[in-house]
View 1 (cartoon, rainbow, N blue to C red):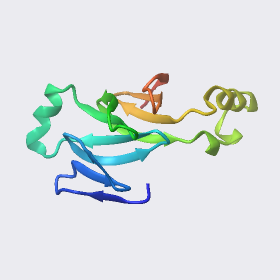
View 2: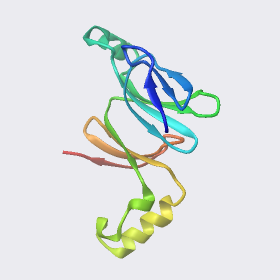
View 3: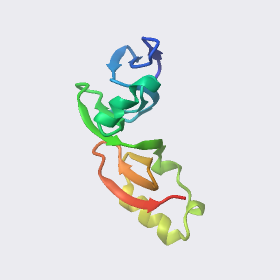
View 4: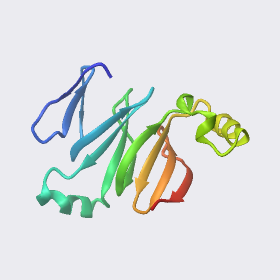
Length: 137
């Protein structure tokens, strides 16, 4: 992303590198991958919390860069972070064997770490396939 400009005061419209994206909710953060853009959103105001209730509190939206279609959404996401495989180090793991297994398993994948309720999940950014879930405290 070279240029990110919010187009309205409620932060529901954003222009990324000249392309306009619009969500029903206030955009909190944006994570760009090679083929998709992931938006973390919140209600526009305290009055619109009922919108989340009606829609199952969807707060993470993945939109295709090619045709701007919604690919997937995830409810109740408190936080989201990109997980960059190339930035992982052996010291991040219990052993060299664990590190090598991780790299082999996720090589070429674009991952997100999402916190949903009491759980931390590692998911594929393009498909929302869940690779692992663990309880977070």
